[in-house]
Length: 605
Image 1 (cartoon, rainbow, N blue to C red):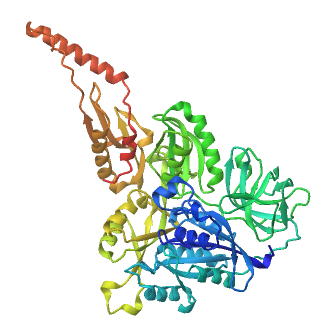
Image 2 (cartoon, helix red, strand yellow):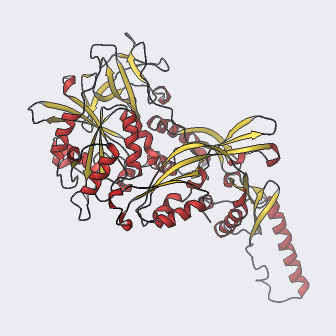
Image 3 (cartoon, helix red, strand yellow):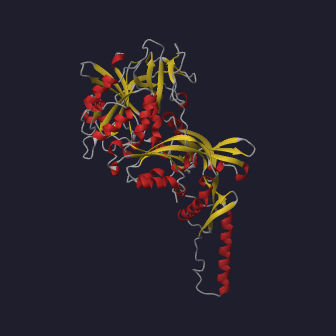
């Protein structure tokens, strides 16, 4: 295909605005998929994506479309996630495209992620094609939404395409707009090969498979390749494109999107953002790649059965290849044994990774309390980064502790008061409030509002999204971005079970909240940890000071049941023997802590 007739574009939108459904209609109209094989969310290939109704991994597909000018065009589509935790998938996809279809729900209008993804696309200098979806809905208001988009993008309302992805309305008009507006890729087909790895996965038979956008030159099968960042060499075992299943081809040229099976068995050798070139004629300059992604949420993952540690390590290696924002390193816990300290972009990202490990690699895992990375200055002047609460130094050894703050943007859907109260309770600082429907100021009850707050990241880790949705009956939307580190009076809250600290239950918390959170936590654990033959004390402590305590009462065995008679001294001897046995058992006995106890730490009091 001539380079002038290639179009690379992605679909970006807020979560649940219809990206995947619109991609289904485009595949139908272009005949890419046989009607008998058509299914909902056809590009969402993981079971998790279909069950949750969200896109987790960006997916690429090549379509052939005969436009109104009679020429056939090659359209390379990348369907991207909408949830804020998977924003890195969007940014990587944008770097492989020249255009983006911005989808906005006709019933909900512009949401938080709509704005965030728009700015990402503008940073990459992409051509934006605004689309209003779900115009078939009874409560759709496409005229109001068109005004919002016009104000956001500074475009004429006539340029906005109105579609119904569910019914298929406006799909051909959208394809024609993609052909007309999205520029053809720039690149030298005869130059030295430079291919950008924008995603990757591990295949048992083909090794590391790199999803690439060829920027310059061409690549054919059986050629020896060179990865620029680490100097590793590999052979192109197979070259192909997605339709949407992998289909081998003889060659990929400048401007095209496809995959290269490298045969590399070490998954760390094929990193996302790297540049692939030919070993015989290597390119002198690598492609810019991507900004390194910094995980913001950290938690420990431990196998329930210690024998599965090696299997967990191998699974993490393979998952890391497919997920550039995921990090891990070995750690050891007194309570849980050997495991890994993992870094995530958010709590949803953490849930997805854990569930993928359990499903795809048949592992049983325990996840510890999520934490953020704190910057600690010790009294001797040294600094360290603490992402595990058990590693926080004692209070007398710390000069100060800094915690990360985020700027969050919330569209509360009309429930402004309850949302502002919730943010105040979580130490949020008001920044500004904007009315999006300026032209409808005469109807304040119908106005759409955007709230901007600064808030500690630790406050939005646990149950924040659930509480936000509950307060707003599901209408609120959220986006967040890192702001800065600030000094705060933080302490480590330790939980002692049977007078022994359980490092996996420790958490770093604001000093003012320690008493309340510690009391609530030990009360919750008292109902979860099973009773033993001896009394088990549960204590919440800061340093050496206990601030809350609960007791799990001992199970009582009736040692007098078989006595049909006898004097009181015989009964007393049996009871004293039972009491001394319980004291000995308390000294040497171990209390098994169930998974529910670790989950209880996640729940706010």
